[in-house]
Length: 363
View 1 (cartoon, rainbow, N blue to C red):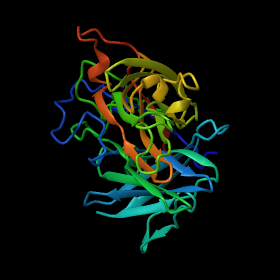
View 2: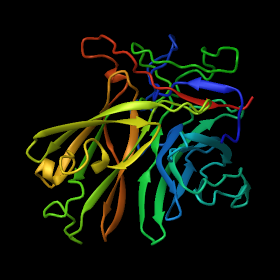
View 3: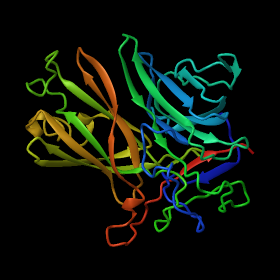
View 4: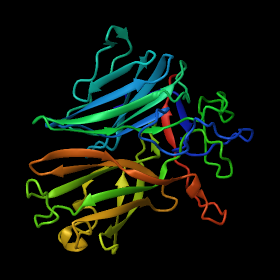
């Protein structure tokens, strides 16, 4: 259930890629058009946050600037029957100030003596994502590129795995006053493929995953340490999300799988608001599943994950579970971005390439 319901802002991240300002100049040298896991940015996505009684998540975020920043965050609950409902909250970070909280416990209003704002806990059974955006004092999006973060998934047995938050940078060359205000408190940014002066970094066009054959007990596809199966869990989140009106987004995702001999297999699935599943549950089940050793014929494979044309983009990560040897989360590699993919090589725009994040702002 929403904690705050107010005037909405509709804005397209470079997630929503390129901007509308006809007078915008070339992109800043400090502005990256691609998604990053290393640079600080104006929008952070933590695709995998869990609090289910056996695993908890430590969420860490830092202000890398020398000015105080205001941060607005969202828990997006992708658990069954939750339909990606969201809970939003906000806090302040003083200059060069890091903070953290657990999904199970949240954080008190005061952090290290600073009155920064309280962070609520996620409900038990939460499996979803956290999005954080940098905003100004009025609550409007601010392209200050001051936020950097990571997350630690921690089990009750003490095992941990860690990943970097996904960072979308804001183009600081764009004017602070955006011309697409409707007068109703809405800010609208849409994809304009012919204009390289984007508001934010673009969502990736393709995600790349290197992985072991799924759930095999036969050497050499099993874990050489324990001799037990290896499972890879994939988490995918749509770039387009209507957090204001809590309207889930569905994206059809295609998988091109190549074994060690470069033989090709394929499958597809639909990301309905949030996907968190093992590779063996994608496509046909059983020994004919293209991620299994029996179908691949090799111990490892390389997979390209591409949304269907005009269907929106996805971001995500993977987590490998080695039976008896713990888990390890890792960020997916990316190829291209939604802006550069907006033409088919002949300059003809492909439709449906805009990705929108709609968030509530204070009145």
